[in-house]
Image (cartoon, rainbow, N blue to C red):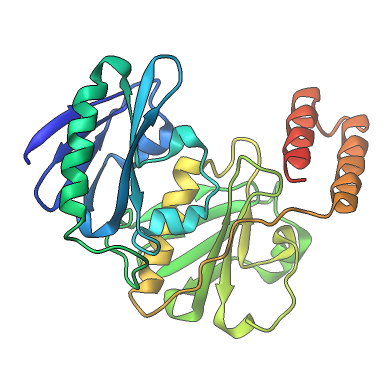
Length: 284
């Protein structure tokens, strides 16, 4: 096709076998898009394309990636907010006819490229080395090894006792990413040697780093998780941790009670209390 379609925050360049997505670096552009820079999405990685009405006089052109084709979406496990979906192109409503033309063209090409789940990643993962700062430590990945270095102000005594950690990709069986935008966000490495062990809270697990307000934001921690997943997949099939299930209401009530105690003790601000309480209620 060789054509270009510009929308809010991104430009899509259509080619015969792929779509090259270039993300803007403007102040209003989601930070995840800025971190990704650009992505080439082979049509073989796409299951379908839709064009739907958007908000405030816009339309949305979206590619639906095939299950297992993109390490970023595997790591996200359905936790990305709509505005941070890298497969959405938001356009002014007056471009609907043009967007419809490209959607029809893509549908014709996709009919020849296959559909359904795939057993290997077809979209490139963010390139290593990668690093980010979590609440209780710093995480780094050089393409073969993940390292956690604990923070003296945030790490639990269990993590300090275990010491800084280094994990070879060969020793991992998976990655569990829980968005920093929800309560108890974290990145946990699943170890082959501990597959039958009982899970412990992330703040006590030396194989996990915990997120907090301003620590481990999505645009840093999600590409990191995707890169580790891609390195794992290169060695063979990788189980991806599912998105968090709905919690027991009694558990939510107990956590809100504990959050209230922290608030009364002055350890959590009014804004943090309201935000975290809303996140907990959203899990019901």
